[in-house]
Amino acid sequence: MAKYSLSDRGRRALDGMYTAIAQINAAARGVHHQFAVDPVAEQRLEAVQREQVGFMQRINVIPVRDMIGQVIGLGANNLVASRTSRANLPRKPKYVGNLQDRKYQLYDTEFDTQLPWEIIDAWSRFPDFAQIYSREVAISIALSRIMVGWNGTQAAADSDPEANPLGEDLNIGWLQKLRLEKATHVMGRATVTAGGVTTATGAAAPIYIGPDSDVADGDYKNIDALAYDLIAGMPSWARQSTDHVVLISQDLIDEKYFPMVNRPLSETIDGGKSTSDQAVSDIVMSTKQVGGRPAAIVPFFPEGTMVVTPIAPAGAANGSNRSNLSMYVQEGSRRRYIKDEPENKASLVDYNSVNEGYVIEDTDFMVMAENITFGARP
Image (cartoon, rainbow, N blue to C red):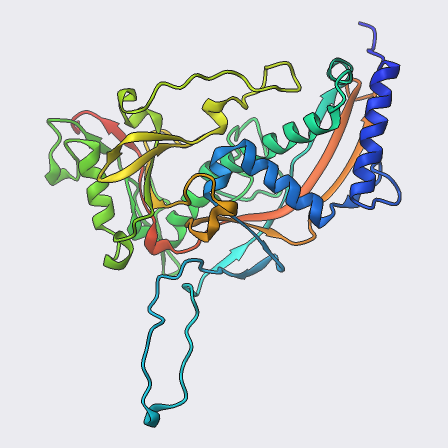
């Protein structure tokens, strides 16, 4: 099979994109050498992700200085009001958040993409080729982040996408963070104690839901009962939050509770073959409730799983700091270089990397049930 040759029009479009990216990021040596992404360009990337992928609006994306540090603890849930008599001066200001003795750790994550020259030729006729390309890269990165956020359990030195197709070995996601940091808030999995620390990382302990299920065995008649029990397991100050949402897998809720949604493919640089349509990139909110709280289906959420935690409302600017789920990104750590690789199936290859991690701002405000199945316990 003959190698594909990039057309003159495609080459002009590609060179124009290279020049624009180099100028935006002040890459003196050009984009074919590794360069640090300019902070303004980095913020633009985050903004595009929030615009194009609905769930990114519901979480906080927070720049931090260090690879390892103390969890910020967003959310003013503590009492800051006080009164001080003259005898008890000085006054004692309080932090408007929830500082906890918990640490975060960021890991270098690579988001490398490839674009065949045939696609470049097909799209080079459009004057906004560079914008289309940048948008599709941003969407791909956002969807990967969400996938790892729900399914990641470890940060392996070398990831294996064949053995871990949902990014299980790329980073420690939110669900795994709860298993490690608040075992008492996890149902459906056995606990393990090692070195004096108890985690919910043991074998699956299935929860059964059905009319014949026996509550005495820890099972429930319906998913609402399970949701109510989960919320009851929170401390009193946490379960009273009005921002709680029940995040639930598609298999756990009858589709009649969710509105029918038209799912046209958005413009995609691969001609409509990507998975960035509304069904995958958006968060689908129910018109009904589960356990007295709004319910939502989110992309890549594990089957047989239910989580209750506050998330930001739709359209929030960077989560508005009202979400209990965050991503921390190290300032200035984003690196990128782009090159032609004729030897790599005649394509443009875009190498991106950044140090980032997943954080639960306050574990008191998050509970989870997993390994849920329908039917009576055998």
